Image 1: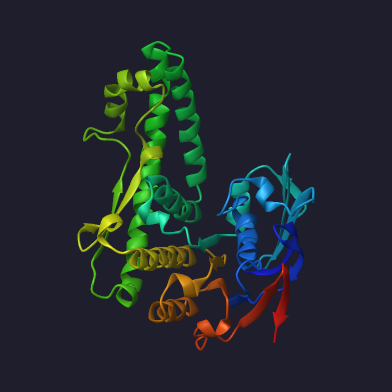
Image 2 (image 1 turned 120 degrees about the horizontal axis):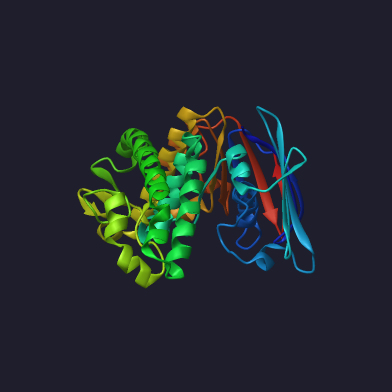
Length: 356
């Protein structure tokens, strides 16, 4: 489901932008601070209802404007998405119908973003790897969102009982619901990781030809006896802390190259290359299990990868059924020889022009 039209109003320095992107490759050029990243950020917001750069609404709304508005038209099947965001409220519409869940946007308009902070997938805490994992499972397993919500509801109730120092019987009242949801989440996560490993095996020889890559799922609690036994054994400490310390909400994905943790074993440049490979594998899995088109946003690709590796990556992308938006200062920084369906846009002072 590629994006065929985007309208942007008062988003950062983009006052009024209207684009008809290509179904395959779109190159966004312009000087630093011209608004290239803002354009990619607006597409990310249309999928996630949040920015990949800031949590502050005031940073996203153009100065002296009351709100920003994003409207995107999708193809196959036809759909229109819209977001209007002010400092007081956010309105999300799909086909002119107001919806309350940002997940509905993500389901309609799946977006993967690679940007200068994406190395946190490897270098930062487990929440970044959980987000990566859960995005993939969400788009492959249609029941995952409901199971995740069931777990979060039970977790919230148990935490409330722990926080208010309720009797043990009340604190444990939600354990069974937690265990059932946790078991289903783990099954779906592990099944997805098997699919992801197969895609990584296809891509790895091009970007890491001599390395052995391994993904190891850590469920989020320390117990060989299962989650039910863990919850019972940790009840006293959970009551002391006032929250449930272990579970799928604390899961992690350990990534190793040549049997060494990537956080400490590889350079920042290799981390960027590995992140790109992980995201491409994720899009490959998505494409195998969905009739929608996944969208890749790659901010400042020439600065993220050296010439050899970005040419390899562009070659890989040209073979995937994805829609791509890449920002760069100059288009000649990129080898575009493998692409036929392509458009170029130039950003200057927040204005975007299509190039011949």
